[in-house]
Length: 210
Image (cartoon, rainbow, N blue to C red; front, side, top):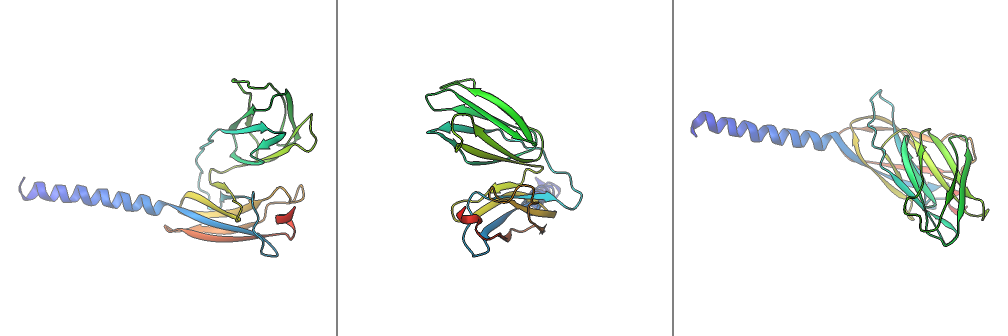
């Protein structure tokens, strides 16, 4: 190979290493813990990071599904990026009429049992959409639509992970279905600098038990 060939090989490997290292520093994870003011974990809270430094966020829009089973919606809370399509699948044995009158998305669907071609709704406006069923008033679900691909939902322990955040400045926001309607999502600054980050969020008293 010779000296020149060897140096070219070293340079190629070095360049590849730098590219991998740069990619690793470019996208990191944020671990978020959400509690109420009494310190109780808050499940089903939506945490999301919006751009605060002028950067353009990618459009991912991974399709989602909400199912109807045993007179309940599954999942109870869904979070999607603006422009995402959500499929509604009826897994009960009776016909259902699913609807929403929320300003962020008004729609009405007839869902047939075992329908292979389940209807789909595109959620094209940020905001909270309350979904109901005409047969059972207690049968409700929420779709929270956000203008960012960096979002997650807290588990039973109140923890969530935002994956693959590029370096930059963000506003970390939190929403929960028990928050009063029209109240802005509380937010805090978040700066990503090539390493994982941790954040804690404390919501109003009583949310965890509602």
